[in-house]
Length: 142
Length: 363
Ligand code: SF4
Image 1 (cartoon, each protein chain N blue to C red):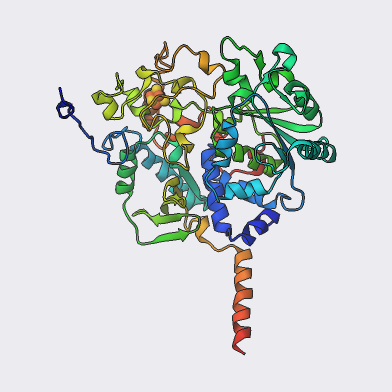
Image 2: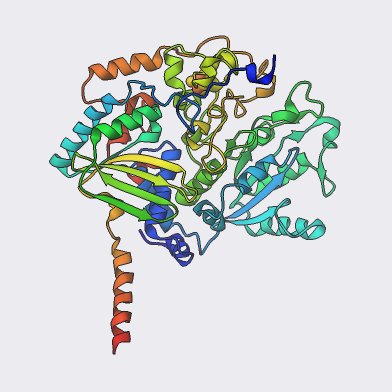
């Protein structure tokens, strides 16, 4: 038997060794949880987040969830220590948040339920620094 | 969110949002509820890091330096590295420039200056055979050195499986009479961070906790921080759905192995091993043993070398139906989610859907 006789099969799932198309059945229930959180947001203005890395979800589950929630009108990209994206889904108030590190790996993933994710807002201290900068720009004009 | 650490970070070009993002990820790694990220960010930012850097003394005993290798490979430059800057590492044989008498002097100086306040990190086991002659530093046995350094320590971190449980040196027939730190020191808080080697971010996480709260994190019955060792590898394994469906790889090259099925029958110790590899992964999040197709060895559990073979399947399936049953129950109760399936047994469970305060975290 030569080496060529040994059949080599490469399964789908490109970079990952597991079956990418396997749904575990754990994703659909998350929709109910999200609905509950959105109700809470509307009633009490309380934002919440679900840590997707903390749940037993396969890559296929995540794809399903992302596709099901759809894409909304707005998406924010944060460039700091790797890219982060905060994209509103087709359900306003529900944001798909992905944090990458500098080498491009996903380090954490959340679904945030908020009018605007906290990370997007400018912090008063930073606004203060910004104002100082602005004033120095004006100063330079004269 | 304002304080010395934030200022230090800002001077190095780390913005508030970057820090916040880091804390959100750290909270996720520590299996804390998402809202804990903000609480941690606020507490850590306010920690008096720049003005009073806590002294850390690191003693190496009967070890292979793998633990130090692991820690120093936490991908740099990173915020984790910057948090390391928030401490003053006063003695670390492998990393320090000083040697011989100078090194010993630095050690004793640090011990005297910071008496009762320094954090002592130990890696390696302590040999008791032949009166401790198997491992000596500067003419002192490891036993003597440990007792001396432990006396003035605020807390001790036993880094790696050797310091925590005896590790490889203690494996049968234990020729040097190796024991763990907790076998010797009984009157100090000891944090065990087992693993062969431990995951770098676990170390940073414990340091972050110490900086944030000035206390030892909540520990399990083996002295491990619950944040990282609160769940088994199996609980968080992405191959878990296959385990629940009874789909197992039978050899390392069969169809099941190619399809990424569960490695239980190939000896995976995931079901009885408490560690964070499944979520944190290794080498800057690249992969981890099960993802690269090999079962878990159980390196963060006591006496894992003597467990009877890395490729022998565990004798009893641990809770084969637990996951399926929970999923069914959850499906029935509309509006409740699988978030609970994973977090139910943690004290943080109740907080998962509420605003978290510092008081909640600090226990
Ligand atoms: S037995 Fe191992 S491979 Fe299988 S689900 Fe558990 S941890 Fe993952």
